[in-house]
Length: 239
Image (cartoon, rainbow, N blue to C red; front, top):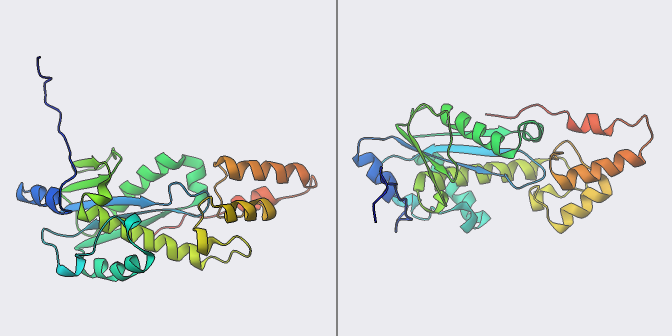
């Protein structure tokens, strides 16, 4: 059987988190940045994207680093300052619920990844992205499926994004919604609160469950009601 040309690269999950990055550094393509997002599936709260450059070595202090979804909340909190201390550079970006509604989740995610990389104090020579190809980057990049479990720089970005977003959601003044517990995801408790209280400014109206409740509330409200317009007013959050 004739082989296809050019040959297709095959990215396999390596036995360690630094194998892929180490290969890029040995090829002279460093610094290597990892990019990941948190909050893509939530129906409330911002989409948070982080980019992180760790450098060619791996400090013993980061031995516990892994995909943020596999770590406990306490483990993530302990790793958060360690990553910031040992990272050569990192940058965290917030995409507000209103921006997610306007752009759509995927487009907002890709834009957030571009902004996170652009905000790094150290320009990377190569970027590893968790799962998605990110067009428009000024340097070579590679999407890595399950990247937060395959590359340390993506895992570090995942922890930075997760802890930052969790802290933000826990600090919201949200009487009755319980954002500190479910972080804006569609749990049974959140669904019940949304049905009882209606959407607030942190909800994403482009999500069908939020939109359905908003439509029902608008139909039941007096003609002079202004809930829909006031709830959608929110500026973009970034740092």
